Length: 577
Image 1: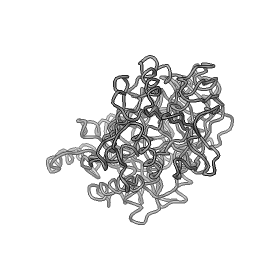
Image 2 (image 1 turned 120 degrees about the horizontal axis):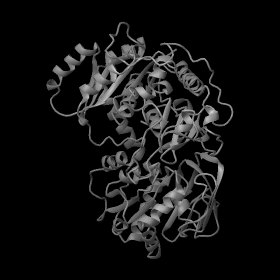
Image 3 (image 1 turned 135 degrees about the vertical axis):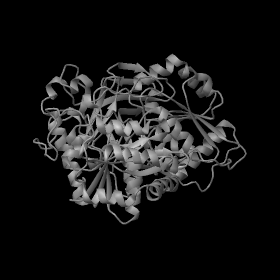
Image 4 (image 1 turned 90 degrees about the vertical axis):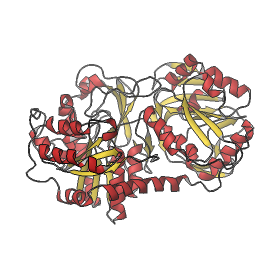
């Protein structure tokens, strides 16, 4: 069996995703065959693997860092928020149900989403079954790779939720993994966070905490060293790295619009426009926004300015308005109308000013939505800007299509329940290259497509931006040599550089190869052992065989409906990240 390591964090957004990716890139550059893994993830940013499985986009990014093809094994449980208190559960890449937080804990509150059933009837044995599922996925990766770098979720010290944990100490103990805890010093209080995280874990859990890693440090590291020495004296554990604050990383984020706004700023290339003008892109910050990484490729273009907006007046100077994907199409449609953004978009259409709808955004630009699946709102009138009628199917479309648009090759991925019937329009947006439409449509300067990721195709992106510039009357010229794939590779190499230059790589290798160190001291007071908390190293009793619908699913409280997309976490160890 291959080596392994779990990267946990003192909080959500402490830097687990980037550290995991950085370790993967550092290892693969050393010739190590490495894979990423996250047992359970909550995210509205997802990706479709080549075999048609849906996983968290952060794990797809980490797979790219490891230079391996993404697989459902890397993220066996994905939770996609649909409201404040319910999530769609994706198990081994396929949606199996819609459950509430109360349903997860065995009380009433489960809902009958696609493939789902009541939460109360699903409770028995769920933790053991899910822990078996994720452990078997991890073991398969370890059998086929030299090392697997696992990412935890939120904090492992959510002591009220330890009994349901399958992503932090639950998987660490089941798979006998050493754990490195990452803390964000930019937030302050990192020493208290490291000590408190350790001291709140049970004795058996603490036995796996092998070290700490400081993230986002600014200044002279020698000033930090006395604190690191005291932390080692207090806990008996070393700090295995102090990573400096790095600007402009711009990697795929898991969730939270606040995070993505920072991501958009980071991704923007500080370079003058190639032509005389810039292009301004306004992205409507709809509720439950999904795959907002679609705009990253635009933000990577010199002279393209991307911002997220939630007021109609913010569309006035935009050369292109994007209505992005959303996990709640009908809810997003109502939000646009309440905010006055729907009227502003309609005025743009009447004036011939460019608008692009992607996935859920494409659906709500149409004439009509029949939704008895996602919102169960029945028939709802859309914005009527595209001749499209959408019917929500219970089976989700998951695909990695290839086509042609504006004379250029386009690759993308599809994740949607909505089935679009195009009844007119000037042309299909994406064709098969022989005149037959594959997806979407165009009416004047209004475009719509179900394909996420299409703007990452460099030739198509440049052709599309030229069309937008012409329609907007801007003297903008796309740079002829921007390669989004190359830029992403550069960013992943920067993550690898951070680990190689600022982490104790010898200590990391010892943990990955040697496993949990012996004799790690107990830090009082520690949490009492819970009856459901199995002894360290014990294999789960229930095999990993998902059977009837959502029977093996877990659920958490979901994302807020507020435009900032912050998530509330009530029911699952560590929240989402």
